[in-house]
Length: 256
Image 1: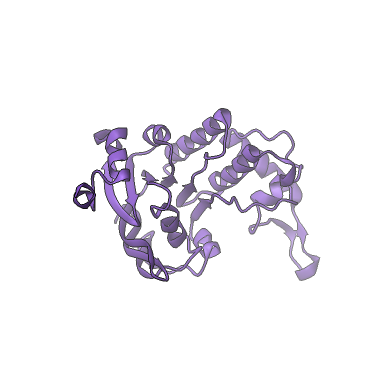
Image 2 (image 1 turned 135 degrees about the vertical axis):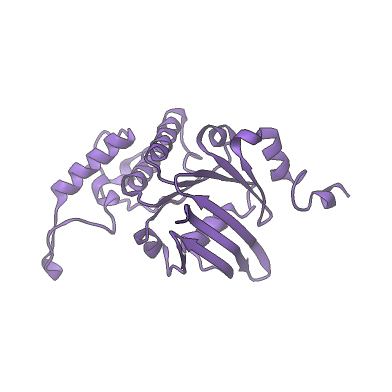
C-alpha cells in the first residue's frame, strides 16, 4: 500500500494569459511535513487553492489518499480530510469561539428541521479541550471573535484546524501577523501534529521556522516548482538561491 497521501501531476492554473501555476508535480507522504517557499507571486497560495478547490484547476491531476479527486469546493476537501488555515482565516466575527470551531460541523441535541437544538454545552467542552491540547490561551471563549486581537483570531483558526485534523493539514502563512509568543504557540501546534503523524504543508516566508519544523522544502518560482530538498541536505543560502533564480529553472537565462 502506498504511503503517499497527496500527489499532484502537472497541476496548472491560468488566469487568462497569466500562468500562475505551471506543471506542478508534488508528492507528500504520510506523516511528512513539507514547507512551500518562494517569493511573493511565486505560485505558493495558488497551489494551495487548487488542492483545496477554492479555485478550479486549469489542468493536471490531484490524488489524495490513494484516489484521484476533483473537489467541487473547499467544503468537500475538508469533508475528505483536508484541514486548511488560510490567510483570510474564514472566521465568523459575530460568533464565539465554540461556534467558530464547530462552524459547518455543529453538534445537535436533536435535529427536527427548523426546531433543531444545538448542543452548546458539548461544543464548549470540546473547544476547551482543543485549546488545552494546542496550548492556545483565550481568556473568554464566549467572547465574539470580533472582540479578539489578530493574534488570538489566528490562534483560534489554527486550533480549529489542529483539533479536527484527520488526514492532512495545510497552513498558509500561519504566523505572518503574529508576535513572538503567539508564533511560538503555533509552532508548538505544528510539532504536536508531527507527533500525531498528521502530514502538513506549511507555506511560509520564515526560513528559520521552515528549518525548525519541516522534513522537506519545496521552492516555487514564477509558478513552477524549481527545487524539492531534504532539510538536512540544504541551508538557507541554498534556498534563497532557488527563490531568487540563481539556481533552478531559468538560472542560465538570469545570468545571460
